[in-house]
Length: 118
Image (tube, rainbow, N blue to C red; front, top):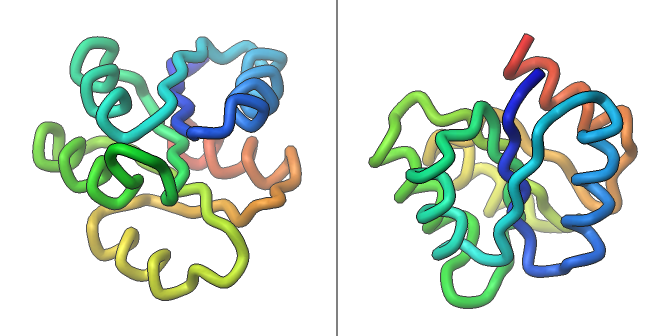
């Protein structure tokens, strides 16, 4: 199974996604903001990153760009709230492989991960 980095400033969402993915056999690492996400990515080299866009210290778009400049093959899925379409387009241009809209369905998260590790 895959090593997945889950990045969100909301702990309850990190826990929810982590449980969802670990129940499918994935190894989970967590980070609570973009700064930690970049550091953790460099240390752990996860197979996939699920990352919120809106976070304190460093937002998801900035973290996405930093991770992709460090590793151009990084597989990042952005987590976004409804109504952030322009930000999603920017994320795709910056190298995000997919995006999942919150509130999300378990099946949508699992299919996004499966597409990238499949």
